[in-house]
Picture 1 (cartoon, rainbow, N blue to C red):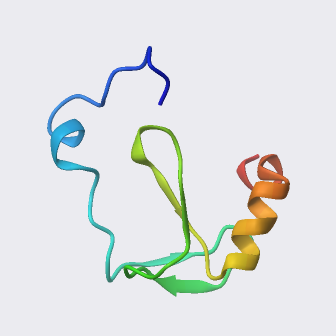
Picture 2 (picture 1 turned 90 degrees about the vertical axis):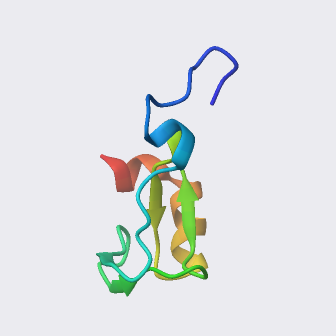
Amino acid sequence: MSPFEKPLPMPDGMRGLPDFRGRTFQCPRSGENITVDMKTPRVVHRHGQSLYFCCFGCVTAFWTDPTSLLA
């Protein structure tokens, strides 16, 4: 967040975004199904939105070329 952005409105700004532990998502790079836990590699974006990945190799690929996964 930049100094000019405000936090999210209640309740997310104070309490945090939803807890996804135990939920299953697909890795945006490999398409592999992953179950989110505290050790799951993730990239936190603006306003606390997280992208979950199956491995740190996918995280590295994301940071190398993020537009290819978000387009």
